[in-house]
Image 1: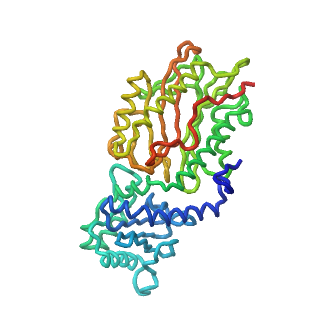
Image 2: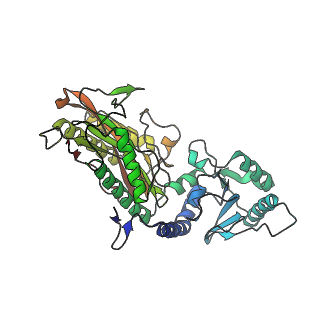
Image 3: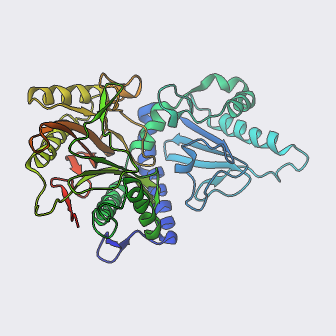
Length: 435
């Protein structure tokens, strides 16, 4: 299966082409995106350091595509000047388009580690920045990647300049959440691929009713991604709901109660949660299908209505996605609008991009609808991407009033034009032949 992402290009791309695209994006982001983000965060120099196998999460977003990890100790120095951002690497090996700012051969008699930190000190002295950003954060794990050891060595190396060190939290989150138009276009294609794989999974190609279990189907989806040359960023899950098996209650939140090792049966509502990785980006998607009973040509009206309510919950939530609002304010506005319309639902949406659960405004948690300390106070910005994740609970007349939980998750982009769905949201249940 390939997807057309342009007049002549198919998705997913071969690995070598992916690397070219990613490196081109990185260059464009360093030139066009980073200067404004540094100005907004009032950071004059940004230092990112990580050792092999203990990398700062941000480091991977700045390395060339052929670098799968740091090598030995890799230090990146990003200095904001009148000409833009100077990107330099204090590293044993050349780092892509970064200017090489140190070589261990400069002083053969010196200890390489001491020489490397001395090079960082020298760059700081020459640039004389007022505020030096380092990756420390209590609210965002992805912005808290400077290890204890590296922090201590940096402070020692900088001496009196260590007093200029400040948290780069705002810069890190902005860097991670901001998407180029080309990245958003690629995410359209990635989401389209996910939707097509799910449609294939919800068919006799993957499901033998009465035999295939929810767990079998989850592994089928993961294998299908592997066959297509894309990786998951988490293990796919598949859940079942059926008449006669009421939802279970977990910490105040009702969830499906059918065991994962149960065989899929006619009349089941099938739900999946999947995410793939490609081009250094992630997706996060949930979709629902219905297994037709003998003689049925459509899902029960109550389940179709539940999906329509879920779509309405999406509408009131995206209406609350206004740049400048905090994640907690979006959550409160969406829940208030839903309550006015009598919708019983929860919102637990999150940024997605370099990481599946990305840095940026958190909009509720599935088990806490009162707000998210720290991340919930972050304000929405344009040119960002989210997983619009939520659920509604609706009684189904055909199930004797038993409540169905309709959970939906769909990629969206927040741009200057407003909210746009990545590929298309689900508005109809996928029908799965029962025999």
